[in-house]
Length: 213
Length: 349
Image (cartoon, rainbow over all chains, first blue to last red; front, side, top):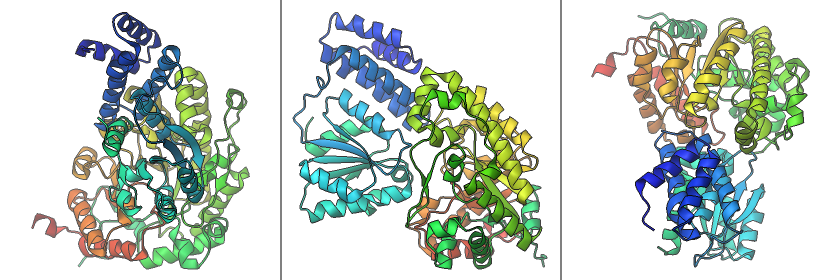
């Protein structure tokens, strides 16, 4: 599908205006000429990515990124059955929040990944890094995504990494959240394999980690 | 030779946009005294007498220009039915959000801070510090701002979900929070604090939409500032104030503490002579600083914002992380004494 910048602009505007009706109309209009998966992967997902980049550049608020993601989730639910977008050849992947009940990162990352065709299990919130690592090992995860808010929680990722090593697991650990964004050296310090500053950049990171286009 | 000022005089000079004997500094060591006293964080933060002793001990060793009666942000969520989860190796965190149903907000009343045990402990700390220090050393109180409290009251997701789906409910919660912040700020002043610092990360347009902050947030902050009967400073708790800084500077705060990722020099120029600038140091970065790094960071901040007064060197988030070593804190203190003495002749060299 050849997505026009005008179409992308209109989807982006609908997302930022929280205009579900406009978004619906744009998607339905495009579906008349384009296969369903392509509409989401080449129109809706890139619009969401643009919004993520605008947040990263300081032009938009995190609340706007979150609210746009929620609109996208709604439209995905309306048009696609669960898991339909997941079509990649990928290792098992899961995401968890370490210790905190007040962050948005997991939902944003999950929305971004699912829109890009990744299948990711949501493991919710956990307070035990050792159990998290054991679960990841037991599930044969290729990648474990961990979101944190507090510096202390971020540092406990080292326990996850240490336990995975002890178990001989080859699971890659990808971390995110404010402590890693504000302290660029922390990812390496805790032994994680990678980090990114924004949710919309996670799909590209995973693609590079697993070696798929 | 410059006369050595008392901390209150030094801070007073800075807030009056004059050069005292040196740049005043304050390190928000809310956790480190526990280590100095050999107590667990939970035991320390649960015992007002220990906190008074700990604040005095760190004030003596660091020589910084204020102490704080602030204990931990999660104390405030206890006023709304939440809980504090203590850790052995880091600051307390809040447990699951207490307000999960719309009806909880509809029936919510403004809590009386004195009736909340965790807040009452903070008031006892303020009274204890005031009894020991009198007026010589300023005591800083603190509270979480009305826009940011919902993050711990509701959880961030529910906060934004309701902002989308039930904005009137959020507005109602903001109004309750405003009244609570005013009551809590005044209770701290009555207990002896010299000034109240509001931690309001959600005043950053990186978190909430700029227009929403303009329309709802700034008026709310002005009302809170006017309702608190004393000096009030505003911190965005390391989130950027960005393009809202000029408007924030018009709200009547005695000081503003933006993120240290923003240009200190530009912020100083904008606030010059009107509002004091606070901050300049990144607590998370401190965790891997050497003493030389600490000195370089202090010099950089003083060079950017120290001249002419109106600047208080501080950590920009509002709490020095537990993992920061005492060696680094001492290096910061030593660097301020070495490079912060007025006049700052060296900055032109």
